[in-house]
Image 1 (cartoon, rainbow, N blue to C red):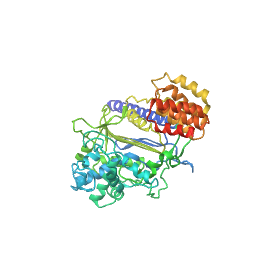
Image 2: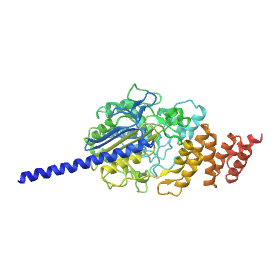
Image 3: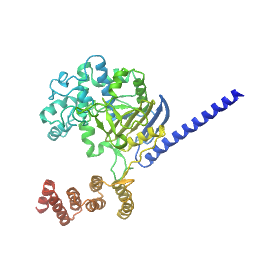
Image 4: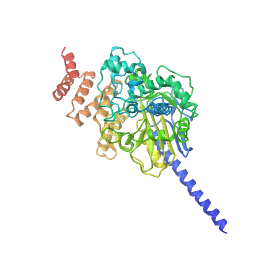
Length: 500
């Protein structure tokens, strides 16, 4: 009888566990499906616990033009999630005694113009270095030039770039620093950066589909996804990322700098990497623990980054979630035109969330953290939506009457929507320059009503009026803009052209 009761109890436990697991999968799937239907996600998701996959699904197209769907082996650009691999490479060389984290960068790169910056500063984004701004002048001189890692130090020296702060004093994101780290890896190891990662990180972690690709390096891979972007007023109209002029600099001009980005991988390969970190294949436990510990600034406070539910400390190439309700959660996000990624590890409970998107869907980071919340029976975060985007989309689809009605309905719902001047301005200009002159005019005029003290809204509205042939009204708007901001040189130049 006791045996029977025991078996009955075990069967009940198994039933409850299975029902809970099924409900979990249903919740996660419902969340990402809703994101996909709302044109806010297109890519692959993988959720694992103790190395076992509990949820995995692909959404959208890897290649829209050829109608190739994303699948489990689709390989995505990781953007800044790549920084984790750069960190691993540097820490491996530290373990081998080939460098020390508190070594000055000039020890390995003698031409580097800042003597007090260390490798630790670069890893933790506390160097004070700029984030590619030193390339602005060289780009103006030659707009076709594609920069690489070897161009970083000469550009810094030529620009005489002032540090944002003294090394170690504050946290400031710097892709430049990670480009320098790649140079240090090459100098110390004697190997090209991509070769080093292949031999010492990807291969031992059994990451068969992972490699580096840049704007000048195109390894042949039939599973590589294409990257897409969209105008905010029409999120369902995807176009290849290179077709947008605004994306030229980050994707092409700066697209050959390795270290900060450009690793290509799959969700399954990243799970392999996750396990390699747990089992000590890549780094010794003490080294990894150091990387996953918040770096302290000169004043003793931890380096902070992130926003709202993603508020995090920063370690050595890793973000550490400030909220420890679910355990110690370490992660890194990635974002660039046509790329949004998240790699999240709950190292207390051995849980993993990996989400890779080949479209510029900026809400993916919150969706990914929400998946971890669901895994731990925690409340999910509900992000406020942009009222400007909702208005512009309705304006594009159904015209001004429907858009104004929607705006008036939602403008008091501040619990779910926020209004941003720049977002509405951008949507209006996008409509304007894409040939929807009247709709662009409507959006930009609304912005002047909502933000009457902003010189920029009048300047943009004036530009729209001019393109619509309304010269006198444009003059009035330019004058209003200049009255608010006498330094508006663009507005003054526009008035001169009109008068001439």
